[in-house]
Picture: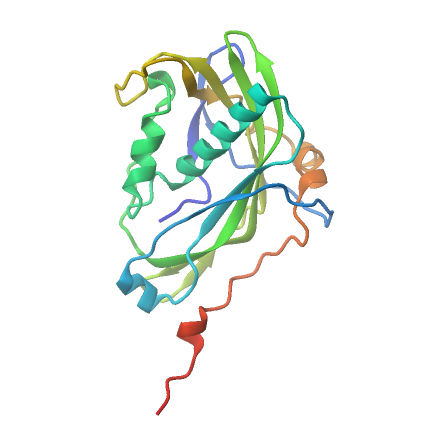
Length: 241
């Protein structure tokens, strides 16, 4: 199951490792912001799941909302891609996300989450937008990227008992720290040369809702829809007699 909320490891800008929750509740108001070039990643349902849950798969879109110089833009795109894998890596149907994530995160930042519970989901639908709204250079070839995560149209999960549950976190902030380095990754791999490596996060769990809104409202997608998608055309079609 894709998790809308998780505790993550984090470090502050000076490198001190802390444990944090990255999800911030925010009261969101309608504001317009035009989308930038968006990359979309999809989960792939199994055949049986598609039959039992005839909805489009949950997707996470990413984009960069502000102009950045090339180096900061590259760092922001890497952080966005990692934020997607960070959200997907506990999905039992997406082992590749976990492998990819651990091959691009520093060992000291790779603090395992709690073991996942039993897989009680039949399927998931909806979507989210991870949007980079800022990036700043720090010492030691490190960049802090500010990402606003908008759950729109939201995450909707059908459980095996027939219930459909949805995420209740419409907007949150994540601030990954990524470093241009040749250090080994958490899975033990060593690159041939420097590349971006996720080395932690700047603590953002204690940001007040007003500050989250000030950061993310100006870049919020319009319309800000929170509604379960319709079934796929094939599933909703009535069989001919």
